[in-house]
Each structure stands twice: as structure tokens, then as C-alpha cells.
Amino acid sequence: MPDSSVRVIMRTPLLLLFLSLASASVLSAQENLLASTDRWTLSPGGAFTSEGGESVLRLTNGPAGLNDLVFENGSISFEMRLPPQRGFIGLLFRVGTQDAEHVYFRPHKSGEWDALQYQSIMNGSTTWQILSGPGFNQAVDLPADVWIPVRLDVDGTWAALFVGAMDSATMRMQLQRGVTKGGLAFSTSLPGGARPGAAASFRRLRVAPRPATASEAAHADAPADAFIRTWTVSQPIAAATLPITVIPTPAGASTTVWAEPSGLVNLNRYFSKVEGAERSAVVVGVEITADRAMRLPLAVDFSDDISLFLNAKLLFSGTNAWESRYPYYLGALNPAALTNTAWLDLRRGSNRLTLVVSDQTFGWGFIASLERTAGLRVKGR
Image (cartoon, rainbow, N blue to C red; front, side, top):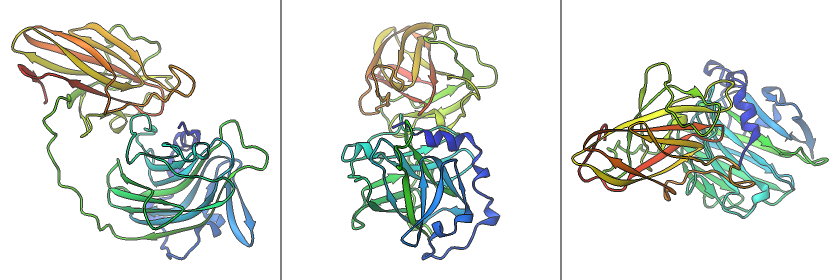
């Protein structure tokens, strides 16, 4: 799942690839945007070629950005030809300075549950480790060396992706950044380098803008469940070593963050990681008031690393990072199966639960659930 081409594109301010809204061009739905080669910024190794009189974009590593298009709603269609090797080949849309929506294909996983992936890029970070399941992963057949038609329909906060046959959507996605607008790019990563003559190829790119028609869901209060949904969080700090056994004291004011309906606290939504640091961390806290002394379980899941303290005493630390347990271990956070339990010995009255959550790459977040809440008040719940 790691896609180094996304890291390449996000390390460069994306406004260098996509011009301002004022320069957006007026499109014809029939215009092949890959025929206008001077409108593209290519990463090293990218090139335009001609096949059968048609313009074809070939990429081996990195992005290719369309300079003068701002996209919000409508259809994006193209054809892609995938190389017969491990790769991460996709489309970035609604691209901003540090954010984008991203769908990508993994030809080496053809037919498997994660052959197709959707993620949001938030504050310069990919998020696939914390966004998985229906609407984020999908099985699809990805034959090599043939042209595969692709269409993406975007409508407000929803998108439908069609791969191959156009009569039914391969995957429907709720866009995690809401309604945004921005640039368009292809992304390619072929880890280990492309085999001789191999590249991801794209042709016949057409964009048909349309006004949004889907009505937005009305705001709903957070459900009454066992998830701890409101937390205070410090500003990010550099975390050099693991495990973290003492609560750090970050500078600056804390902020309040909220869990999403699944219970996930998506830290990428709120923070950029510390520039130049191998690992970034935040200190997360909540106050639990108990009407009597009690012992109860707290279920947690996280990415990448966590240390859990109750009243400043370390109870649990763990790692759930990419390849932290065995080769190609995903380190994905699973809201449906919280795999770690810490036992809280609460005293009568106020108790401070503190988490130190750190991340290197691919997504930053956590979930915490009190499996029993009778006799408790959680500040912010």
C-alpha cells in the first residue's frame, strides 16, 4: 500500500504544480487533455509519446500535474495501461497545497481485496493506514499491458469509480475532506524501479465539469456509544525514541479534537507532522470522573505508536507501524476490531487519561472505547 509517488508530490508545494483559480481554463467535455502536452508538469522520467497518432503519457515514478485546471464536481475519464510489476498507479484530484483526494491501483494485487485504494491526503500526509474497509479498499481485476477504461464521477462529498465496465460502480467513496476543489494529477510509483520498457501509461483524459446534485446529509450529533469522542491534544513534537515512558511537556496551547462517527480520531485532519523529524507525537488527554473506585477495560487501536497513562502512570505501550511485526505488515487501524486492552484502576473522583500517539508515515490516529460507562463522566462526552 505505500505509495512513494504521493510522498514525492506532497513534499513539493502543490501550488507549484497547479496554478491559481484565476487561471482555470474553460473545458469542453470532448477535449483530450493529454493532447495538450505543454499544459503538464512532469516528474523526472515522465514523458509524452505517440501511439497510433494518439498522445500517451508514460510515468515510471512520481506525478504528472495538469497546470491550469481546477476541478470540483463532474466526471474524469481516461484509459490506463499498467505494467506487469509491483506498482501504485493512480489519480489525484481536488489537489491543494497540502491536501488531495487520491485513488490508486495496485497491479500486483489484481483480484485481491486491496487492488484498489482510496485515501485522503491531509496536511501533507497519506492516510491509508487509518482509512480502510468498504469505500476505501476494493477487489478489482487489473490485467497488465492492456488499456483499461476508468471513470470517476464526483458529486459533492461523494464519488463513484468505474473500472473496466461502465455500467456499475466498482467502488463508491465518501470523500473525507468534504466539498473542496483543486488540481488534477496522475501518480505513479514502481518500487525498485521500472523493468526495462515498463511504465504506467495514460491516454484519452477528458474532464466534464458539472454542478453538484447530491444533497448533503444533515449534521447529526455523535452517537451515544462507548467511544471517547472529545479530547484535548497538544501541538506536535518530535519523538526521537520509543517506547515513550514519561509524558512529554509540549510547548504551546492544546486544542480540542473530535472522533469521527467510526470512533477514529484522525490526527491528520488537525496537524502537520514536525518538519524533518523521523517521528512526530502528540499528547492527548481526557478527564474521567468516577463516582466510586472501579476497574474497567479500555479498548484501543492506533497508528503508529502509543503510550497510555492513567494519572501519569504508564499502563501500556505498543507499536502498530508499517512492517513493525513482519515484512509487509500493514499496521492498519481497524475501527471494527480494537485489538488492545488496558485495564484502568480508576479512583473515586477525577482521573486523567493521557495518550502519547506518534507516527512516521501513512496515517496518524487512534480509537479508544470504554467498554463500560455506568458511574462515569468523561469530560467533553
